[in-house]
Length: 489
Image (cartoon, rainbow, N blue to C red; front, top):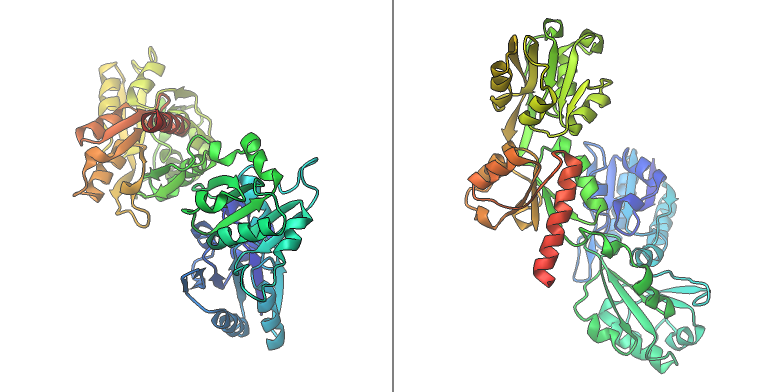
């Protein structure tokens, strides 16, 4: 029986350590803080007991004594107990107190350090805590006390004289009093200050000023926030990076099926978006019979869902496709083919039926085609192949698309909503029957999807020029730029 005290890092789920993530993924019990984000909590295995122990300035889900008791109780029950804490457990995280309690109770524990917000949050805001010629040292101080009260543990005048960089954690509610105490201790009133709220997250926001102005300029900032005081704070103007990403601060809804959403969501997050995963569809394989590809000259796959399901119908034996030409609609479907060890002989650059017909120009007459696709897909491709003289066209439905009510984040709160197929458009409208769809700003993967959106009254902010995920992401960036121009001129 071991309790692991793990630092989750400052907020960005990618900043947890390899060791921390490994233990989290095999936890039997997870006791987690408010600053351990939902993406990390989702890494816990199915069946893991989740215990929320978050603390806000105005509310504690559990007192520290209750947290300590829970760790001892679950630690004695055996299994893997993970205590997931924001930042580093031993930097104002009370991890050392929890370790003492476990030690007294005779329970084994391990400390897995985390990246502290004292360093990471300024870095994400473009503020180095040290810089040659500006600061050779930095001091980390809690601001979670009133510096004017008698018996303060913080010697503010000494910190004012120490120079270097001063990093304050949990100080936004006391910035005015702290600034006054530092100025009274000899710090220059025009010392640069940066306050970074929600650091390392897509909604990160930085407010700058000086010691004599920061209380007023940062009055609207709410925790969690990190304050940096010193000349290095002025370097933000030169080297800030996260808040300059093209989708920073933008809420983008992803409506495609959950099992497919990761790739799109990851790309959007990397560009700075707050992603609202709101799947309105799910795919369900159709339990059909075996497929005989030898009866055809060309097998056409019309979506990224099709390759793996087709391989399943072939009993997992890709050799059965030997001698058959494989045609893929769009680069996304070609990429999905490669994931199952197959290479498309022909790839339509436009991920629509018309694009495949263009790629097959002059190679249709007299040939036999199998269309591996979704149940209820458009008849346009089959009809066009027959009209062009195909010797035979058979359609093999591999899966069906079913509507799903989005759980969690509400896509209607998004600034932009992405649609990857006409089915996501129709399912979105069905999921929000009373919503004013003309208020939604959609971004479409291609013309068929766009037509479905317009038919339902959804306004389109952009349509992808390339009908794949890369093209969709480019369209989101374009829509974001247009939105910024409309808002700010």
